[in-house]
Image 1 (spheres, rainbow, N blue to C red):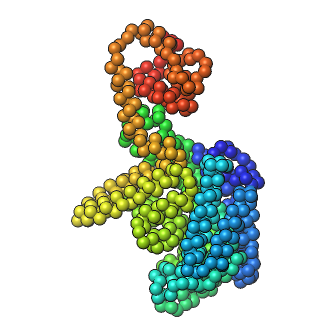
Image 2: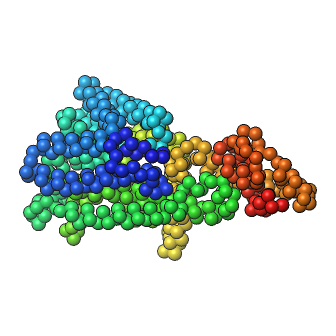
Image 3: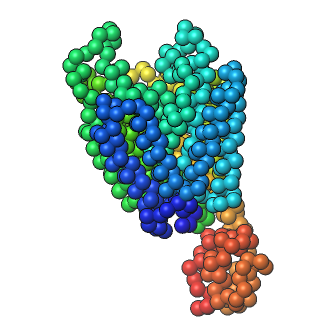
Length: 522
């Protein structure tokens, strides 16, 4: 499959060229996730904690996870075992004081090595699953639980701290269970173990005054309604993505004909619409993953005021908050929530110097070695700091009335959406050349226009002279054109992607009024 390699190392249900203009999702991924959804329902009903032991639940969840990984990635799935084994060995055989440092270096180094091998040896653009977020989270909270006293911890750290070393089975089950091995989301180790043991509901049946609420103690809450709602959301997001992204692909913003032919304001509008049509792909993947976990019984987060159960403990996004965000921070707080929480707990709250920059850098390394990731996160640092400065210095002047507040909200919403679109284009196009081309689009456009103006200042010639000169023109050497040209402009267009010199020769002509005239007719 072109630029995908999604699950090409394992058994394939069916190979397709593309589901959409973006090749990151495949039929095999969706099929595996649907299988995981059905298995999750079976897991909750037939392997309920009241019917079987935590040991059996751990074993089944782990084996099913390995099966999905092997099916999707083939022998590449062994990296799940290798990295888990390395970090678990470090946790067992090194001192508690240095365990978190060694595990961090080994986990991040191993991930980077896998990313480099995957991208530059096997397939640039190949899909991969993350298998390090949970690894790096569990040893951090094992370290916290074994070395820190409760009175020295924040409430969140106290809740997440792991007070005993997990067994190898528990560790593998947490990292490689079938519920999240393909698309997450990341959850805390304590939340996962309480789910396996069946005690997760009990903790949230207790009122704030410490007394148990008998009204909700009769039976475990059913995730049926939450799962159906999330599956409906998945279907809608998939339809929107498949239909609209074909019309507005992001890659068009770096195409030279588009850059030179569209005014700036239309390119900004198109950029927003293309990103708006791209985001449903992520909504689909993460919402489906959330539904799978809920179907198994993982994700219960207490009750609403009306007594209905909440199933958003490990939800990865809030769609309405994302699309209506009026600040960079609000957008990021509602996008990829569990990964953001992991970065906050592992890096931001523990880094003594420049935590914002360190968090963005860790996020870029964790995502992979594509240069576009680093462009995105470096730009994200500047955007975050700028947004903070604007909010601190400007917002106070718009709080005098509801009208001013509305104006401020509209302006900040538009600014946030444009800033997000500008920031994440390199994340989509991935390569250095495409990223720089997008960032330098205005400079490129001015250069083309200046060349066009200089060509228009040349002395006018008669039609006969123009025709003679055009048919005698030769293509730049090395542009890949080996046969005689019947149309100079047409030949340049066919070969512009092969060599930069062909593009250099073509695009000044693109703005010429003679572009659409066939030279052979003169």
